[in-house]
Figure 1: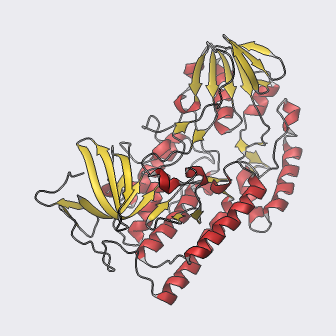
Figure 2 (figure 1 turned 180 degrees about the vertical axis):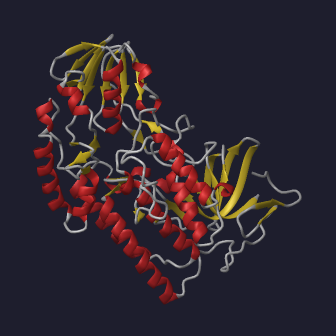
Figure 3 (figure 1 turned 60 degrees about the horizontal axis):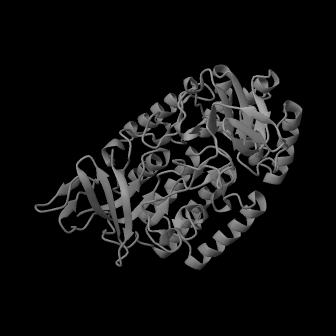
Length: 475
């Protein structure tokens, strides 16, 4: 069995940011990824990707890019999926991350031994690979397992059903009567696509959401809230943002959409420049929640009945980490208390990057989390005592419930507030480490960063593996 310093699971934005931060800190690592190239969900047609051909960023370029690797200044404010995938591939190539990634390897098991080390099994092109590591970073994302209504709506539906995870382009909807179900960004994108290809497009929205145009006052809309975040608490930003939206586009009810169930900044915003005009042009017809099915007819909660050929479920994803022992996930991955949304409280050496839902872009957040991980594993950042971590997690959960209710409060973060918090946490943790001269985490690793010999295998300090005679499967 081969031995590594750190195993990173996933080579999407979260995994790439983690590998970069570990390389900067001179911490050797290996990454297992199911795809055949870096980029994760941004790779159209990738094994777990939900990308579709018309997909673009819904956060602006300057608020989405990695801090240490800006997107080209000549790009549009909202690049398409192909540009983002190329950007992530360029990021991996520029910083030499490709050599650390084992593509087409699906992690099937992560187990903590009684000695505190971790055993990781992955299925690859040449069979099962088994390795041990001092630490594991889960960066595999949480938008891969489709979630359908549970319980299902009563009645029998004979129309074709499709989850947004399997949607690739408007040709799937060409000439058909389409019902799109949901109020998130994918639902709005797909409804707009359908309105140009289908013979009829219906949009069923169960609860109200804030529809935000991608531009306000001539600027990308998220840059305005970012400027306010440096000066005002979220409640004040909420009032200002709601006023701007009312002035710019009016209330959602004006377009036949239900009133938002929560105040702005208390749910993930839905950004679309095209949805509201398509509604006002009669190309998209808004419907309330589904009541039941009857053959190819859909009966809605207001009594309306419409015949459809295709139902596209844009109902989100289940947070699933199938390779981890359920005992490590407690009540579920979406409820797992993590210090700073990164560090497992009861399993030292187990960390998560990207297990969160942000009010803004993901890339700067995972970049900040990756720096915490790298600092911890390099011994330059020390965690506070466990009791303090638990107290902090409990306080953060209370605040999240006050703001977001029971809609995955353990995963929710305010984009700007979190980036500020992560920066302060890194600085404070460095002071803790300096004060205690805290060594790198315990495990089969020397303090100078070298590796000890593993049974049946040996690791080089640069993270490459060399199989010893009689050792386990290579990668």
